[in-house]
Length: 141
Image 1 (cartoon, rainbow, N blue to C red):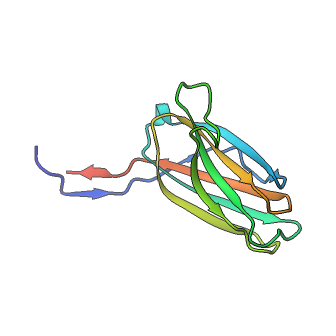
Image 2 (image 1 turned 180 degrees about the vertical axis):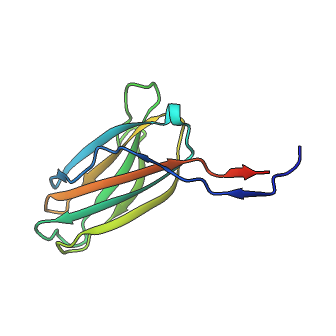
């Protein structure tokens, strides 16, 4: 077999996450919509969380974004038993809208849900999560 002339990145496919201006109280967490990677068989997840607060959060507190997998197609892992932490961060102490990309996350070939946890910021967050899944590369002959 001849080697390909070059490889090229492939375009991502937008996935429904279930997070669109979702309000999550401090100390609470929410799982989004199912993304069926058992069918899609994509290799990489790129996502972004867009958030704001109506009242500035407490300084040096934590937000988390997780991937929860379903290995049997029905039941999902939790943070404590197999969830994958994608990003933890401390939100700025203001009421501006912020964006944070989470790029090049390798996916397993199972259904999964994104999960946002407002650990202890002291205020409710309004969050939107956008996601795209894609193949790693395309071989061009």
